[in-house]
Length: 79
Figure 1 (spheres, one colour):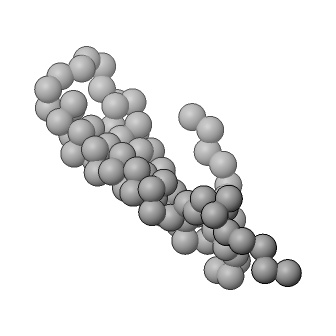
Figure 2 (cartoon, one colour):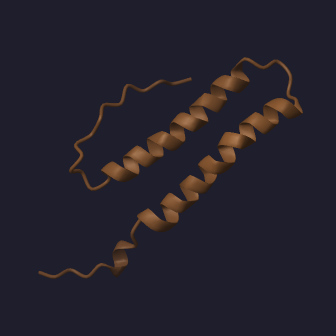
Figure 3 (cartoon, helix red, strand yellow):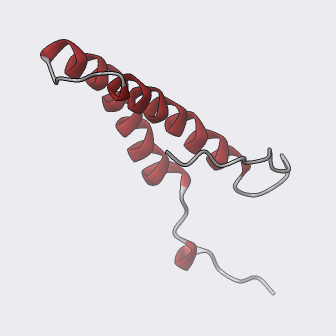
């Protein structure tokens, strides 16, 4: 697993809130990767634990894409 040492960005950065949301989702996924790393055999219990976090993480990611990312072609240049 590649653990990147990522520093905290400037809160004034345009993507700061999206960055935070993506890291929260990533942390959930990383926790589940760690969970399955210790499992030798797949089973229903482990699969359910995976789903309990991954399904909400997926919904958060979908929401982020749909609601937070702007279609910049709709933004007019007011120079």
